[in-house]
Image (cartoon, rainbow over all chains, first blue to last red):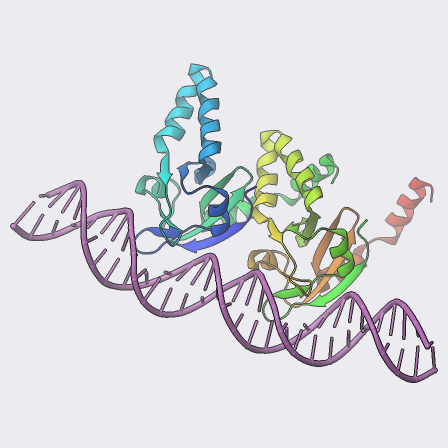
Length: 139
Length: 139
DNA sequence: GGTTATTAGTGGTTGAAAGTGGTTGAAAAC
DNA sequence: GTTTTCAACCACTTTCAACCACTAATAACC
């Protein structure tokens, strides 16, 4: 299960560290794509293949958009010896990533966020709605 | 069942003791996350997996906030040989934890509080509302 | 009640791993 | 043929988890 929050800076050459705990969970090689809310998604090859299968099964009308969004932006990523990755420019632009970056675990995938954006998203989480949902779940 | 209240100081290295009674109840390894009202939650792996399953099954509208809140903040914790744990900075910031800390049992989870905050929460507990609820329960 | 044994809690040290910066050489672009 | 780019290294720093040693508190026993 992918969990946790990890902060890094992108160095002048565009390299960013990638958390070793998440690296261990994914395999040697993994997939980076555009994500929702202008973040980037990181999938293990396994999860990626599942997603690809699911997209294939969609009715053509819906599949096209999904294909363009995910397949069009997807990149295979292999970290270097020190565990760093290089994020392609188009994805960096999409996610507004320049310097400060947060990697966040999200169960079956990881997400990469511009730090400020992530903070904002966290601040906007409504405590009441979470408390409500917790109650619904019986926790 | 998790009960009791335990006070500790965080040492300069960010380590804090964790009550042995609660440690015994949880297993060797457990999960620390953001909690409600700016405290931190401690779940046994069992409870955590239940929560994760429940979150997975939620409709997407509710799931997103829950995922970001819980999975994003979650950390696996293994106490050291002396029973201490290290609280990640982001969680320390979230819960306003610097020095004095209280660990509180709360049935199926434990909570970690900044001591002052906890005192305030206790003071704010309305005796009347508790008496009322007791009556409802027939106690 | 006093003594001893055991467990809980605290402080400090150290070594491995994680993270960061820079260099080089091959391949691609011009 | 020259320049540029970028991946693969190499070297250094920082961080943190694993120990070790000690003190305080509690329980057990005589």
